[in-house]
Structures are given as structure tokens and as C-alpha cells.
Length: 254
Image (cartoon, rainbow, N blue to C red; front, side, top):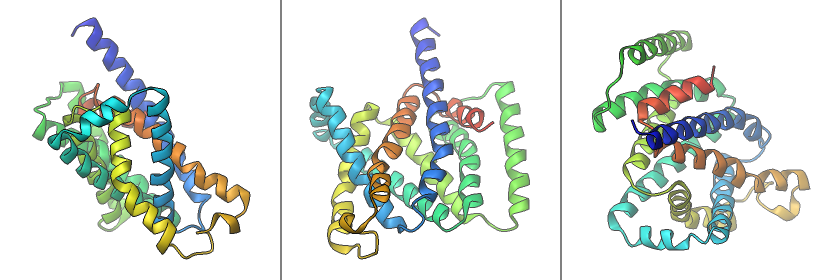
């Protein structure tokens, strides 16, 4: 491994730990939105993430990369797919947290590293060293104990693990930087989110003018809560093997 590769790997590990740490804290934020429906929160995540990413691209003068990506049919196919996967993952997670199913949601992100290892081996030809196999065996044992304690098939946990596992795999396969890729993903979801907020949502919290200032600030913060960890994750995914990304997840949760 060259010094440049080693530097990229170190950056990737730090980015991955940062992403998983922020996601570990995120349930506190979503629990504070307990009175807001899952679809409404998801729509706010998409809309405010779009504006935040647009600002970052504007000040970074990086619109050319967006144009180049949107001219590539293969890259757009990947990003449409990843946009759907990450949107589904967000929706399931928000619904689980606000439905007091934190155990299900947490279990999903403990299963996810094992999914990453399997996907890396099946689709990317990654191989594990002996010590890594030992770590996988230990993690598998821990997940098995949790599954037995759970007492039933954890459908939500499996859906979260699979949707985010395939998201990471596809983002690794498409050659697009983190910021540009995430902007295109949110752009793909934006029409549905905007239509829902403007014309469909009809709840006590759907109008900013009727909400307390604190709630409006929390909804506006959805862009930051969504964008920062995902930028870190996609940055890490381009620098690391999926198996290494999985071990970073485990390390961040220790």
C-alpha cells in the first residue's frame, strides 16, 4: 500500500467513525420531533438537505461536477437507486424511533456491518484476514444473542440493515464524490417531498406559521442532521473496503 493509499484509508476510517457517531446521537433529535409524522420529517430532511447541499456546491464552485454526473446515464441510474434506498432507510428509521421501537432500529445498525462484509465479499471480491474473521465471528455471536433475546423476526432491523448495506455498496461502485452524489440523491427526492409538504400534509405541525419557534428550528435543522453524517459516510465509502467500513461501524459503537 502506497503512502497515499494509507492516508486515504486513515481519512476513511475517521470519516466513518464520525458518521456512525453522529448517527448514534441522531435518535435524540428525532425523538424531540415525536409529535411530527414520519413522512413529514422525511420531507423536511430532503428539502433542507437539498438547500444546504446547494449552498455548499455554490460556495465551492462545484456545479460542473453536478452537470457532468447528470449527463451520465449510468451514474444517474446508480444515484436514482441509491436515492430511493436512502429515502426508504430514513423513513423506516424515523418511524421506528417515533413509534418507540428503538430496539428494532438499533439492532438494524448492529446487523448492518455483517451485511457490509457479505456484500463486499459477494460483489467486490473483498477478502478478510484471520483477525478480521475473528472479529466477524464475535460480532455475529453478539447479533445472534440479541436476535434470540428479541424473540421474533426483527423485520424493521433487517430492512434497515439491507437498505443501508446496498446503499453503501452502490455508492462505492459509482464514481461520484460525496457532496455531488448526495445533492443528486436529494434532488431526485425533492419533488415528492415538496409536493407532500405543500399540498398533502395536513397536520397540526404542517404549517410553520402555527408552530412554536423551537419546533421550526428543529425541522430546519433536519438538513444538517441528515447531510453531515451522510457526507462523512459516502466520503468513507469511497476510501475504504466495505468490510473496513463495517469494522469502523463497530468501533464507533463500542
